[in-house]
Length: 321
Image 1: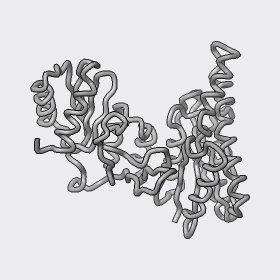
Image 2: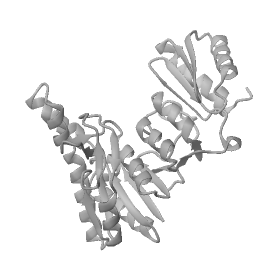
Image 3: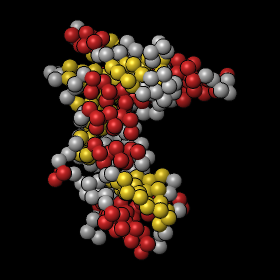
Image 4: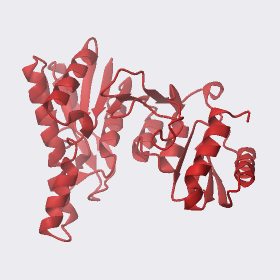
């Protein structure tokens, strides 16, 4: 069995958290081959970008990529040092050492191909490959970055290339909720969500997973699990569910006055129901649209939070209301 685990920057911010992550990897490795993907330590990418902007108003995209990708290299090396100090054999690999080939679009590249031979070699030597997320190399030999959420994308792409049994994304939240719990404290954590519904929410602005990573998971049929690095939790599984297990409306997200609900029941009937509920509450619907697996209503941005709460509570938490 092979598992890919990805750890975000907040999970790696400082010696104690590095030791905690190393211990999580030790436990996960029992009876399992393990590949780890890391983001830069919390705040590193912003700090490096700030240094670049202080020196140049318009740094070249190539040099910016060369600079900001060092943050992941730092995190990978420090995590491997931590693992080795605990007696856990590991090796850090940059994106290009891990065989990640991208297009030539700097600061927002796409992965074209992965040659996992080096990773397989390190696994055969009994080591945990710790791969730098967010980066690869283009055909010209230049370092490229994958844009926002790039480390999630790296992890899912590696899981697909290695035919891993799953991919675990560790972050500072304990799973995927029916809505952003920072906005709606009544939101409920989901045990599972269909990949198609997660993709619809990610494209509509949900920041839990980047759309590119979910697109790759859907294309490669890679089961994901979102977990917290800081507390014990089952997290949320993201996978293709049978229709009988898929929620009618699984979640809701909003940005800039647009409110999107996703699920197998996101159809014309649900759209009319949502518009009627908002109208009865005195919220004007300015526009509406149906896309596969989701429906979107546009309201005045000043009404967004109240509309989000009403539709969440009445159509997801209490659909009989």
